[in-house]
Image (cartoon, rainbow, N blue to C red; front, side, top):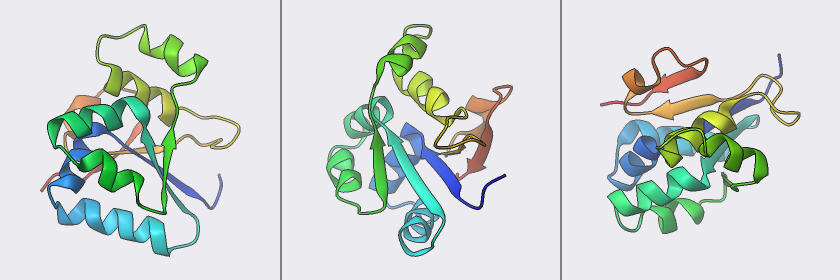
Length: 126
């Protein structure tokens, strides 16, 4: 287990950030100010958040503590297995990698959506 906390924002958490959800705002602040916190936005989820709440993608990508995760070849292959690109890319990026050996936590406002998935979830619903 590492000392770094890796958190992936799904499109619902990103949309909530754009709408001023205080829980998401606190998470973003924590990732920006505390050592060992890393915050990520899968590109496909960022697209959906920007569609749902215009201006969200621009706002989030301007944050210094947020890393946008590209749609690389392994992610493309994962996305082709599902119809919901945002969900598939988020799930794929939460899996363990050499950079994130313990995987990542998915921050969401719809935790039931991830029920049964082999991922850790942070409930940011109001």
